[in-house]
Image 1 (cartoon, rainbow, N blue to C red):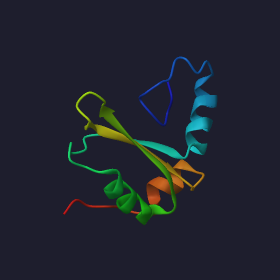
Image 2: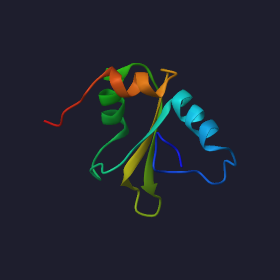
Image 3: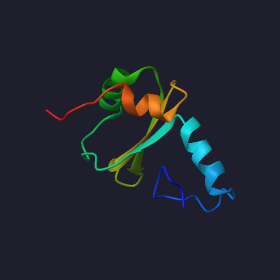
Image 4: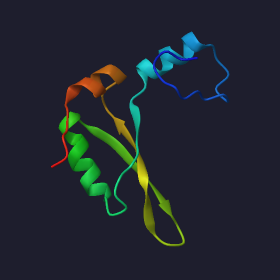
Length: 92
């Protein structure tokens, strides 16, 4: 089991050590428990506080054209620890 995450991508097909190394170099974070009314613009605004945002992918229901409360955020920062420690954003 990975020491950095409880989640394991079984399709990746690598050892726990290799998986941890890939996580450390990753520049994408999963963001869950978002309001259904959260917009991509709000995500860009919030995460730009951590540095340059490469892209935001919002999960959505196509037939209803609404978000499902989760997103993926990709940063120009290259290391996971840098992204996680760059800022602390508290809800208002």
